[in-house]
Length: 72
Image 1 (tube, rainbow, N blue to C red):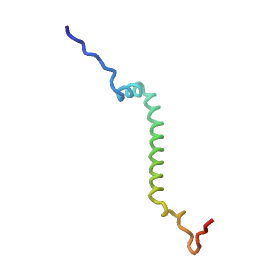
Image 2: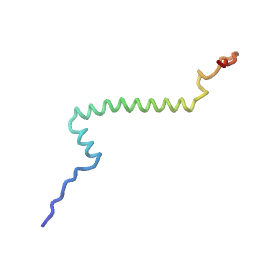
Image 3: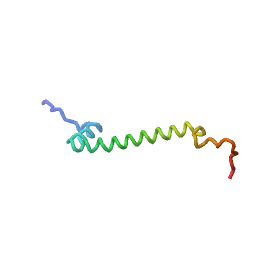
Image 4: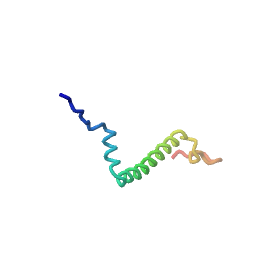
């Protein structure tokens, strides 16, 4: 008896590919919000990294010349 090869359902990426690429409207709908979310995430991350590495060096952190800082 010859066994027939079975087609597996595939992995996670193949399943996502089938869902996202099934038609052009689904693909475009997935890409546009993904681009906005990706841009927001990168912008937020870079901003946080910049703030973290420049603590005490920003213009707002420098006291005005000739004035003593007030401890209130």
